[in-house]
Image (cartoon, rainbow, N blue to C red):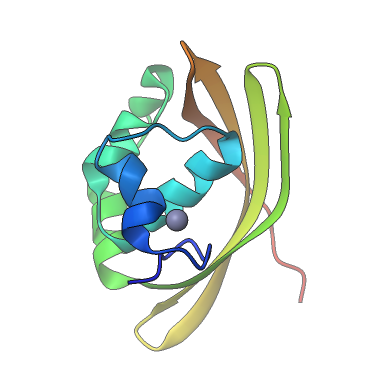
Length: 130
Ligand SMILES: [Zn+2]
């Protein structure tokens, strides 16, 4: 099965490695992709595990879970990925479908590297221009 993140690799050779804990995502972009795949595969624990503990309090698990269950994840597009030391920024568009309607989630996420592992820190939603 192809990985939901769009890498053209098999899931077990791509984000599956991170979801199962065999490997940790080497870059902020890899973490971003694996978090998208985690939504697609309803891997809520992975989403928690890769969120900065300081951010975790503000995450609504139930809402995320409900969204992941309802939405069909169609495509991930990485627009820009940058890393500077222990800080990473990834701008992306996630295409998904809910009840036969297509949506685009456009976000700039920031990531932080702690003891060699990347964590999601925060996300800023970008409004879509029509
Ligand atoms: Zn992947």
